[in-house]
Length: 310
Image 1: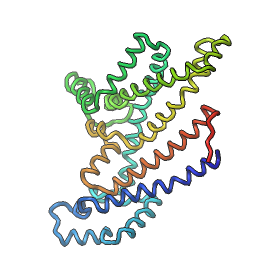
Image 2 (image 1 turned 30 degrees about the vertical axis):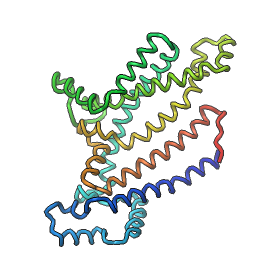
Image 3 (image 1 turned 180 degrees about the horizontal axis):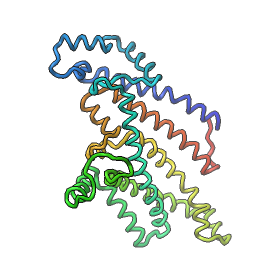
Image 4 (image 1 turned 90 degrees about the vertical axis):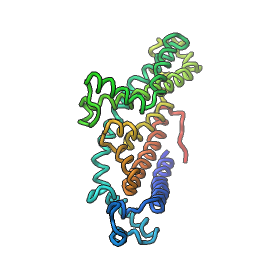
């Protein structure tokens, strides 16, 4: 167990190094001149060349990449090309908290509603209730964000003026209701179907029938035996959901005008702001790597039969 954890932790730097190298290479050889992005389209060739020299863009590729890695290890991701005088760390720090709040609220809705519905659907397998719950979830899952978000805006914002149509005033404000619904409701379908399938797989096992034969009630069997074993697939999904909290929701934040990291990523891609793009990529990669390790460790806690070896 300890050897496995050490091995996974030692993989972190290698994974991040590969990702950073690929991302930096794409930015280095990608279209667009960072100096022109910073100076604007009306800049003269002379001023662009001076800016390239000042930014170190004329240095060899490996020299630039090495400097970037050492600066990134110290928390310095450079300055934004689009936002003059603003560091990348400053931009991301302010916006990642907003995306985290939005994603966490949506995940709470998905888990809080999806798991109970999945358990209920499994218990009522084959009944009208089972069909209704699964179909109810699939309806929201099959509706794309670029359709559900405008419909909510038109209905609750434009027609009845009940909710703000854009902006962000905090997770407890009215402006957070529609974005949270748009992000959270599709997740209900995922959690419902996954919980139902996992629950049904476990409920037909021999040890469950033995528990019933011992005289335990359905509630005791479901809570003590079935639910714990059915959590393993759910932990994987929950782990990935936690990792996505730091990357934001590109489409949702753009439609609702939420100043989160998802919208920042979209703006940075459109403006070729490579330092911001590389920083977001590294942060998301680190979050997914760390979450995968935590999920693997939780497997052992939930089911002692699972043993992690080096």
